[in-house]
Amino acid sequence: MSTPRIDLRSDTVTLPSDEMRRAMASAEVGDDVYGEDPTINRLEARAAKIFGREAAIFVPTGTMGNQIAIKLHTRPGQEILCEARGHIFNWEMAMLGWFSGCIVRPVAAPQGILSWDLLEPMIAPSTYYVAQTGLISMENTHNMAGGTVTPIAAIDEICAQAHQRKLPVHLDGARVFNAATYLGKPVAEITRSFDSVMFCLSKGLGAPVGSMLVGSKDFIDQARSIRKALGGGMRQAGVLAAAGLIALEQGPARLHEDHANARLLAEGLANIPGIEIDLATVQTNIVIFDVSGTGKTSSEIAAELKLQGVLVGTVNPQLIRFVTHLNVSSADCKQALQSLRTICNTRVSV
Ligand SMILES: Cc1ncc(COP(=O)(O)O)c(C=O)c1O
Image (cartoon, rainbow, N blue to C red; front, side):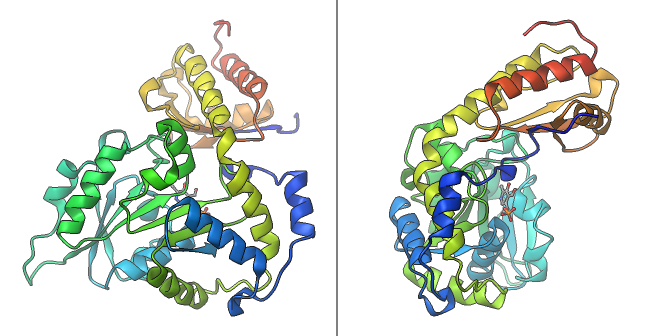
């Protein structure tokens, strides 16, 4: 069995660069619970500036950032509208029920792209005898829909309509820099209408650890208190912020390479008999495709790929997910396609 060397499971598997490791080793640090870590303070100030907001806070994970935002925007007993395949609903350990006392009213959207027309009928009527809608949460790019991008016009309309009804809108922007790259716009512009934004340093941007929550000064002051309550007061975490700063400054500029590699994978997959892929959904660095026509399950194919040194993720028995990132080259993608062709027993050339 060969050692796995092409890891397409997620963009979370990236390894810190030598430059990041050097910056971590020499980072100026202090106790961040006292607000005395200069590297954390620099990272938070940079994130706020890049997003055109008053303030930002460093959190260990995207999950913690989302859950702090949900806690601050809602009251127990409320409903949260989010897309049916959304991360906050499906992958955050039911924390919005556990920690914030809310439930999700899921809204299924084609390609994971919400619109006001889909959301409006799901808002609870304002009467005393039904649970009230407390928050709309969006995800851009949408992970489980295949890295799809919600256009700015749809975001601005949803936020404007929600705000008229005094409803806050949060963005799970774990991969918002991928969305910005696809749209060719700055992140500040594509997130301007949200009340709060979480984004991850530890995915496509390449940091080993960390996410940011950005918003108004008042909101982030309160977020600091909730982060502490969750055990997220991290003391000399400047060693992590040092890598985060490099990810934030340098990561976005190369995301188009990951998108090109995802496109290369998608177009190759479309030529493999038995594999079904909707090329229109491949907009950023995620490729989700259906293997049922091959006569094998996704787990069987994933296990065979692993034997050939290619690691991939399964979404369900039919669907496989590939994610491109800075530690995957176009040659790796071609190699992964070749392995898959062999497994599917086809003779189509690259
Ligand atoms: C869309 C989305 N939101 C949030 C998260 C949570 O990030 P973390 O793994 O840092 O908690 C992820 C992680 O994969 C994600 O894909």
